[in-house]
Figure 1 (tube, rainbow, N blue to C red):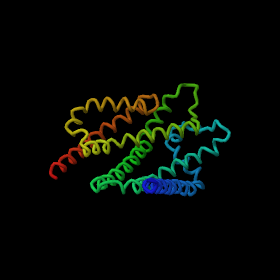
Figure 2: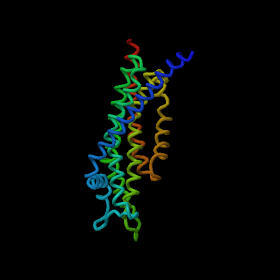
Figure 3: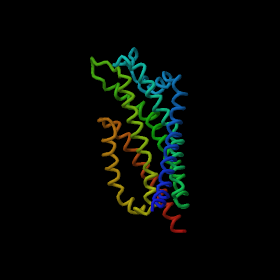
Figure 4: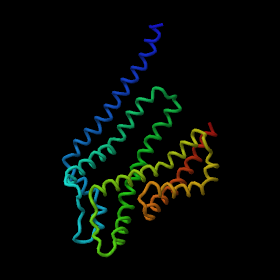
Length: 246
């Protein structure tokens, strides 16, 4: 009896050891990238804040409210950038841990989903930085009341920008979610298309919850999500046709 208990516990312990090793590799990758970025922390923040700086009126600048802000904020941003850069390696470690327990047909879909979701997340962040931010900050600067100086705080800007990046990155995962639902048979593409109106309404509600309380950023998030819905629906229909031929 004791031998059976020991034999059952050995696989569990080995899984825990492997999980620990995978986590160490993932954390180590983030730290290595972070250490490589530290010498360029100030340059990274300058590039990160460029869309906002370009919208500040001539003679204005950003400010640091906290005394230590000019030192810690660029390092915090560098760590966030390091994590974003290391995401593919982190996801690979997750994949390497769960892959032995998956069937072959499950493995065939996991890798494309991981790659596509990573690429779409990066595209969402790029869309926010290169398209949304310039328009948004020009709008905010133009709406500044008389007698008020438009001088944003660097810490507040970092928190605001990272939340927008996360919102757009997650919003761009809509095609992956629709394809996955169709692939698993949870809901058919025809049913998804029938509920298009509810999805569009939900997109605006989610945009309201995930973005700052201004209609501009909410619309700029909801419209791409609606477009991505159609893209995801297109590929979901292709997945359904492919499964029907098998």
